[in-house]
Length: 326
Image 1 (cartoon, rainbow, N blue to C red):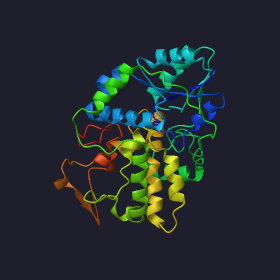
Image 2 (cartoon, helix red, strand yellow):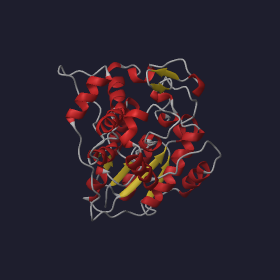
Image 3 (cartoon, helix red, strand yellow):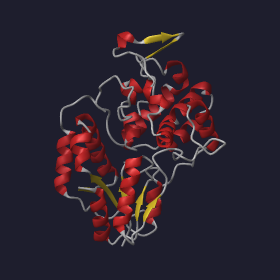
Protein backbone atom coordinates (compact mmCIF):
# COMPACT_ATOMS: atom_id res chain seq x y z
CA UNK A 1 0.00 0.00 0.00
CA UNK A 2 1.12 3.54 -0.71
CA UNK A 3 -0.11 6.65 -2.45
CA UNK A 4 0.40 7.88 -6.00
CA UNK A 5 1.85 11.30 -6.82
CA UNK A 6 0.65 12.30 -10.27
CA UNK A 7 2.96 14.92 -11.75
CA UNK A 8 1.82 17.35 -14.43
CA UNK A 9 3.14 20.94 -14.28
CA UNK A 10 5.33 20.13 -11.29
CA UNK A 11 8.24 18.16 -12.74
CA UNK A 12 10.55 18.46 -9.74
CA UNK A 13 11.33 16.91 -6.38
CA UNK A 14 12.22 19.94 -4.24
CA UNK A 15 9.51 22.22 -2.82
CA UNK A 16 6.74 19.77 -3.75
CA UNK A 17 4.07 19.66 -1.01
CA UNK A 18 2.26 16.64 -2.43
CA UNK A 19 5.30 14.46 -1.72
CA UNK A 20 4.96 15.15 1.97
CA UNK A 21 1.26 14.36 1.93
CA UNK A 22 1.77 11.13 0.02
CA UNK A 23 4.68 9.98 2.19
CA UNK A 24 2.36 9.73 5.19
CA UNK A 25 0.90 6.51 3.74
CA UNK A 26 4.10 4.64 2.88
CA UNK A 27 6.20 4.27 -0.29
CA UNK A 28 5.22 6.82 -2.93
CA UNK A 29 4.65 5.93 -6.57
CA UNK A 30 5.65 9.02 -8.56
CA UNK A 31 4.03 9.02 -12.00
CA UNK A 32 3.72 11.03 -15.19
CA UNK A 33 1.33 10.21 -18.03
CA UNK A 34 2.25 11.02 -21.63
CA UNK A 35 -1.04 11.98 -23.26
CA UNK A 36 -0.68 10.98 -26.96
CA UNK A 37 -2.85 13.77 -28.48
CA UNK A 38 -0.85 16.42 -26.65
CA UNK A 39 2.47 14.71 -27.28
CA UNK A 40 1.97 14.11 -30.99
CA UNK A 41 0.09 17.20 -32.13
CA UNK A 42 -0.28 20.04 -29.65
CA UNK A 43 3.19 20.23 -28.19
CA UNK A 44 5.25 20.82 -31.35
CA UNK A 45 8.76 19.50 -31.83
CA UNK A 46 10.72 22.02 -29.68
CA UNK A 47 8.27 21.79 -26.81
CA UNK A 48 8.13 18.01 -27.07
CA UNK A 49 11.92 17.85 -27.00
CA UNK A 50 12.06 20.08 -23.94
CA UNK A 51 9.48 17.94 -22.13
CA UNK A 52 11.43 14.81 -23.09
CA UNK A 53 14.78 16.07 -21.78
CA UNK A 54 13.06 17.29 -18.62
CA UNK A 55 11.49 13.88 -18.01
CA UNK A 56 14.85 12.16 -18.48
CA UNK A 57 16.43 14.53 -15.97
CA UNK A 58 13.52 14.00 -13.59
CA UNK A 59 14.01 10.24 -13.72
CA UNK A 60 17.53 10.75 -12.37
CA UNK A 61 16.25 13.15 -9.73
CA UNK A 62 13.90 10.43 -8.48
CA UNK A 63 16.70 7.84 -8.48
CA UNK A 64 15.11 5.88 -11.32
CA UNK A 65 11.76 5.67 -9.52
CA UNK A 66 9.63 7.66 -11.96
CA UNK A 67 6.74 5.70 -13.41
CA UNK A 68 5.97 6.72 -16.98
CA UNK A 69 2.77 5.65 -18.70
CA UNK A 70 1.08 6.65 -21.94
CA UNK A 71 -2.59 7.07 -22.68
CA UNK A 72 -5.55 9.06 -21.45
CA UNK A 73 -4.92 10.06 -17.81
CA UNK A 74 -8.61 9.42 -17.13
CA UNK A 75 -7.83 5.75 -17.68
CA UNK A 76 -4.15 5.43 -16.82
CA UNK A 77 -4.20 7.06 -13.37
CA UNK A 78 -7.09 4.94 -12.01
CA UNK A 79 -5.40 1.85 -13.47
CA UNK A 80 -2.11 2.69 -11.76
CA UNK A 81 -3.87 3.43 -8.48
CA UNK A 82 -5.47 -0.01 -8.62
CA UNK A 83 -2.15 -1.69 -9.45
CA UNK A 84 -0.38 -0.28 -6.41
CA UNK A 85 -3.39 -0.39 -4.09
CA UNK A 86 -3.19 3.36 -3.55
CA UNK A 87 -5.16 4.90 -0.72
CA UNK A 88 -5.08 8.27 -2.51
CA UNK A 89 -3.77 10.04 -5.61
CA UNK A 90 -2.09 13.39 -4.94
CA UNK A 91 -1.94 16.29 -7.37
CA UNK A 92 -1.13 19.98 -7.51
CA UNK A 93 -4.35 21.83 -8.24
CA UNK A 94 -5.04 22.85 -11.85
CA UNK A 95 -7.09 26.00 -12.37
CA UNK A 96 -7.06 26.18 -16.18
CA UNK A 97 -10.45 25.00 -17.55
CA UNK A 98 -9.13 21.99 -19.51
CA UNK A 99 -6.94 20.74 -16.69
CA UNK A 100 -9.65 21.23 -14.11
CA UNK A 101 -12.19 19.34 -16.22
CA UNK A 102 -9.72 16.48 -16.76
CA UNK A 103 -9.09 16.23 -13.03
CA UNK A 104 -12.81 16.06 -12.32
CA UNK A 105 -13.09 13.16 -14.77
CA UNK A 106 -10.15 11.37 -13.12
CA UNK A 107 -11.68 11.89 -9.69
CA UNK A 108 -14.89 10.23 -10.84
CA UNK A 109 -12.99 7.33 -12.41
CA UNK A 110 -11.03 6.75 -9.20
CA UNK A 111 -14.22 5.90 -7.34
CA UNK A 112 -13.48 5.42 -3.63
CA UNK A 113 -9.82 6.46 -4.01
CA UNK A 114 -9.66 10.20 -3.25
CA UNK A 115 -7.94 12.65 -5.58
CA UNK A 116 -6.21 14.99 -3.14
CA UNK A 117 -4.93 18.39 -4.31
CA UNK A 118 -2.30 20.36 -2.40
CA UNK A 119 -0.83 23.62 -3.70
CA UNK A 120 -0.70 24.69 -7.34
CA UNK A 121 1.91 25.69 -9.95
CA UNK A 122 1.61 29.30 -8.74
CA UNK A 123 2.94 31.17 -5.72
CA UNK A 124 -0.66 32.21 -5.07
CA UNK A 125 -3.35 29.97 -6.53
CA UNK A 126 -5.45 31.86 -9.11
CA UNK A 127 -8.76 33.00 -7.69
CA UNK A 128 -7.52 33.71 -4.18
CA UNK A 129 -6.63 37.35 -4.81
CA UNK A 130 -9.87 39.24 -5.29
CA UNK A 131 -11.03 42.84 -5.39
CA UNK A 132 -12.79 44.42 -2.42
CA UNK A 133 -16.13 43.48 -3.99
CA UNK A 134 -15.02 39.88 -4.47
CA UNK A 135 -14.49 40.11 -8.21
CA UNK A 136 -11.45 39.51 -10.41
CA UNK A 137 -8.88 42.17 -11.18
CA UNK A 138 -8.88 43.43 -14.77
CA UNK A 139 -5.59 45.37 -14.60
CA UNK A 140 -2.15 44.27 -13.55
CA UNK A 141 -0.95 47.02 -11.18
CA UNK A 142 -3.75 46.73 -8.58
CA UNK A 143 -3.60 42.97 -8.89
CA UNK A 144 0.16 42.93 -8.29
CA UNK A 145 -0.23 45.09 -5.17
CA UNK A 146 -2.96 42.83 -3.75
CA UNK A 147 -0.95 39.75 -4.69
CA UNK A 148 2.06 40.92 -2.68
CA UNK A 149 -0.14 41.82 0.27
CA UNK A 150 -1.75 38.37 0.17
CA UNK A 151 1.65 36.66 0.40
CA UNK A 152 2.56 33.02 -0.14
CA UNK A 153 3.67 29.97 1.80
CA UNK A 154 7.28 29.11 2.55
CA UNK A 155 8.91 26.43 0.35
CA UNK A 156 7.97 22.87 1.27
CA UNK A 157 10.60 20.52 2.68
CA UNK A 158 10.98 16.92 1.60
CA UNK A 159 10.01 14.54 4.43
CA UNK A 160 13.00 12.81 5.99
CA UNK A 161 11.24 9.44 5.81
CA UNK A 162 10.27 9.69 2.13
CA UNK A 163 10.36 6.25 0.48
CA UNK A 164 9.99 5.92 -3.27
CA UNK A 165 8.14 2.95 -4.70
CA UNK A 166 9.56 0.96 -7.60
CA UNK A 167 9.37 2.15 -11.17
CA UNK A 168 6.33 0.64 -12.90
CA UNK A 169 6.94 2.29 -16.25
CA UNK A 170 6.07 1.10 -19.70
CA UNK A 171 9.64 0.98 -21.04
CA UNK A 172 8.38 1.52 -24.58
CA UNK A 173 7.31 4.99 -23.49
CA UNK A 174 10.78 5.78 -22.16
CA UNK A 175 12.16 4.79 -25.56
CA UNK A 176 9.82 7.26 -27.27
CA UNK A 177 10.85 9.98 -24.81
CA UNK A 178 14.54 9.28 -25.36
CA UNK A 179 14.09 9.49 -29.13
CA UNK A 180 12.21 12.79 -28.81
CA UNK A 181 15.01 14.22 -26.68
CA UNK A 182 17.49 13.38 -29.44
CA UNK A 183 15.50 15.05 -32.23
CA UNK A 184 17.29 18.01 -33.86
CA UNK A 185 15.87 21.40 -33.04
CA UNK A 186 16.65 24.84 -31.63
CA UNK A 187 19.17 25.15 -28.85
CA UNK A 188 17.64 24.54 -25.44
CA UNK A 189 18.92 25.16 -21.93
CA UNK A 190 20.15 22.16 -19.94
CA UNK A 191 17.22 20.31 -18.39
CA UNK A 192 16.48 19.46 -14.78
CA UNK A 193 16.34 20.99 -11.33
CA UNK A 194 20.09 21.25 -10.87
CA UNK A 195 20.55 23.21 -14.10
CA UNK A 196 17.58 25.43 -13.32
CA UNK A 197 18.92 26.27 -9.87
CA UNK A 198 22.36 27.02 -11.28
CA UNK A 199 20.86 29.51 -13.73
CA UNK A 200 18.72 31.01 -10.97
CA UNK A 201 21.65 31.53 -8.61
CA UNK A 202 23.66 33.08 -11.43
CA UNK A 203 20.84 35.57 -12.00
CA UNK A 204 20.60 36.33 -8.28
CA UNK A 205 24.33 36.98 -7.98
CA UNK A 206 24.95 38.82 -11.24
CA UNK A 207 21.73 40.35 -12.56
CA UNK A 208 19.06 40.90 -9.91
CA UNK A 209 20.63 44.18 -8.84
CA UNK A 210 20.32 45.61 -12.36
CA UNK A 211 17.07 43.91 -13.36
CA UNK A 212 14.95 47.05 -13.16
CA UNK A 213 17.30 48.95 -15.48
CA UNK A 214 18.18 46.16 -17.94
CA UNK A 215 15.18 43.84 -18.12
CA UNK A 216 14.00 45.31 -21.45
CA UNK A 217 17.43 45.09 -23.07
CA UNK A 218 17.30 42.09 -25.41
CA UNK A 219 20.98 42.60 -26.21
CA UNK A 220 21.85 41.68 -22.61
CA UNK A 221 21.37 38.48 -20.67
CA UNK A 222 19.64 40.49 -17.98
CA UNK A 223 16.61 38.34 -17.15
CA UNK A 224 16.42 35.09 -15.26
CA UNK A 225 15.94 32.81 -18.29
CA UNK A 226 13.73 30.56 -16.18
CA UNK A 227 10.57 30.58 -18.32
CA UNK A 228 11.09 27.09 -19.82
CA UNK A 229 11.71 25.66 -16.33
CA UNK A 230 8.71 27.40 -14.79
CA UNK A 231 6.50 26.23 -17.65
CA UNK A 232 6.94 22.61 -16.54
CA UNK A 233 7.28 23.30 -12.84
CA UNK A 234 10.94 22.32 -12.64
CA UNK A 235 11.15 25.18 -10.16
CA UNK A 236 8.28 26.63 -8.16
CA UNK A 237 7.83 30.42 -7.99
CA UNK A 238 7.62 30.10 -4.21
CA UNK A 239 11.21 28.86 -4.12
CA UNK A 240 12.41 31.85 -6.11
CA UNK A 241 10.43 34.37 -4.07
CA UNK A 242 11.93 33.01 -0.86
CA UNK A 243 15.43 33.45 -2.29
CA UNK A 244 14.69 37.01 -3.42
CA UNK A 245 13.32 37.87 0.01
CA UNK A 246 16.68 36.87 1.46
CA UNK A 247 18.54 39.36 -0.75
CA UNK A 248 18.91 42.79 0.80
CA UNK A 249 19.93 46.00 -0.94
CA UNK A 250 18.34 45.17 -4.33
CA UNK A 251 15.63 47.87 -4.02
CA UNK A 252 13.58 48.55 -7.12
CA UNK A 253 15.06 45.62 -9.04
CA UNK A 254 13.89 43.14 -6.43
CA UNK A 255 10.40 44.68 -6.36
CA UNK A 256 10.22 44.68 -10.16
CA UNK A 257 11.20 41.02 -10.35
CA UNK A 258 8.59 40.04 -7.76
CA UNK A 259 5.98 41.96 -9.74
CA UNK A 260 6.94 40.16 -12.94
CA UNK A 261 6.68 36.80 -11.18
CA UNK A 262 3.01 37.51 -10.35
CA UNK A 263 2.07 37.91 -14.02
CA UNK A 264 1.18 34.26 -14.80
CA UNK A 265 -1.25 34.23 -11.88
CA UNK A 266 -2.79 37.50 -13.03
CA UNK A 267 -3.14 36.17 -16.57
CA UNK A 268 -4.79 32.95 -15.43
CA UNK A 269 -7.15 34.76 -13.07
CA UNK A 270 -8.20 37.27 -15.72
CA UNK A 271 -8.82 34.60 -18.36
CA UNK A 272 -10.86 32.47 -15.97
CA UNK A 273 -12.95 35.43 -14.80
CA UNK A 274 -13.55 37.20 -18.08
CA UNK A 275 -13.33 34.43 -20.68
CA UNK A 276 -10.97 36.49 -22.80
CA UNK A 277 -7.26 36.77 -23.41
CA UNK A 278 -5.37 38.51 -20.64
CA UNK A 279 -4.76 42.20 -21.23
CA UNK A 280 -1.08 41.48 -20.77
CA UNK A 281 -1.04 39.02 -23.65
CA UNK A 282 -2.91 40.81 -26.42
CA UNK A 283 -1.26 44.21 -26.14
CA UNK A 284 1.50 44.41 -28.75
CA UNK A 285 3.22 46.73 -31.18
CA UNK A 286 3.84 45.93 -34.88
CA UNK A 287 7.31 44.44 -34.55
CA UNK A 288 8.84 41.25 -35.83
CA UNK A 289 12.60 41.78 -35.87
CA UNK A 290 15.25 43.15 -33.51
CA UNK A 291 15.77 46.02 -35.98
CA UNK A 292 12.23 47.22 -35.29
CA UNK A 293 12.57 47.55 -31.53
CA UNK A 294 10.95 50.69 -30.25
CA UNK A 295 12.59 53.19 -27.92
CA UNK A 296 10.32 54.74 -25.33
CA UNK A 297 12.32 57.25 -23.34
CA UNK A 298 15.41 55.48 -22.07
CA UNK A 299 13.96 51.94 -22.35
CA UNK A 300 14.10 49.93 -25.54
CA UNK A 301 11.75 47.00 -25.76
CA UNK A 302 10.33 44.37 -28.12
CA UNK A 303 6.70 44.11 -29.14
CA UNK A 304 5.90 43.18 -25.58
CA UNK A 305 7.82 41.29 -22.95
CA UNK A 306 5.85 38.17 -23.84
CA UNK A 307 7.10 38.18 -27.44
CA UNK A 308 10.72 37.45 -26.57
CA UNK A 309 12.23 33.93 -26.51
CA UNK A 310 12.74 34.44 -22.76
CA UNK A 311 8.96 34.17 -22.41
CA UNK A 312 8.44 31.56 -25.12
CA UNK A 313 7.18 29.08 -22.54
CA UNK A 314 3.92 30.98 -22.18
CA UNK A 315 2.00 28.82 -24.72
CA UNK A 316 2.25 31.33 -27.58
CA UNK A 317 -0.19 34.08 -26.51
CA UNK A 318 -1.77 36.31 -29.13
CA UNK A 319 1.06 38.81 -28.88
CA UNK A 320 3.88 36.39 -29.68
CA UNK A 321 5.92 37.41 -32.71
CA UNK A 322 8.94 35.15 -32.49
CA UNK A 323 7.61 31.87 -33.86
CA UNK A 324 10.18 30.23 -31.62
CA UNK A 325 8.07 27.10 -31.18
CA UNK A 326 8.18 26.84 -27.41
